[in-house]
Length: 217
Image 1 (cartoon, helix red, strand yellow):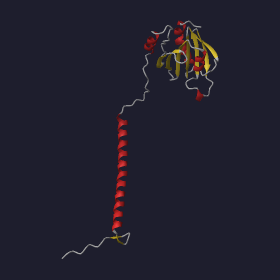
Image 2 (cartoon, rainbow, N blue to C red):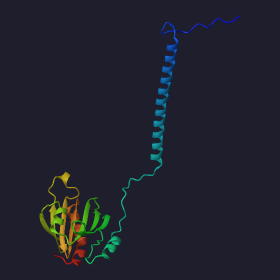
Image 3 (cartoon, rainbow, N blue to C red):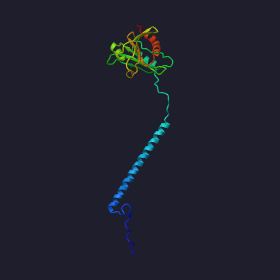
Image 4 (cartoon, rainbow, N blue to C red):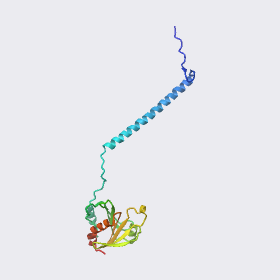
């Protein structure tokens, strides 16, 4: 004796059995929701894995609180520059606590002015850029000083320097708050930066023998 066919399941929301079309629609919607839920889960797991990886890298990479500064051998670079120049190139012995972070020779460019540059940091971590320009013209110097006018003259160890104070708004000064300039031989010496006047004079004192070697003005 054959078993009677099973009655279609009554869907509570409908109060009756589903039609074939309703069943197909329900299965399609359930499949869509499953795929969407799985995609979200995969994204969350991927994000968690990325965060964990970054944390591991941060933890295993050694770090130092000491600022990275290049070790500049000014004397070695100056000796190399001097070998190709007839003009005496400054090569200062820096005071205690001072350090150089740049030293380079700039060949004459569009302004036809070649120059020797040393970037210096004071013990207070203030900046002074030292430039020795060869056969500089007034336009070069005016541009280097943002067309500021000299405000005073100071003499340091027999060398006379013109003093420049940048009167522009603080936001427009860049690294030029104060400057000293002098000339000797074919060279124009420019000290410009953010250090105090006393630190500028300290550097000027160190440079005096080199400048006098070119014949002070």
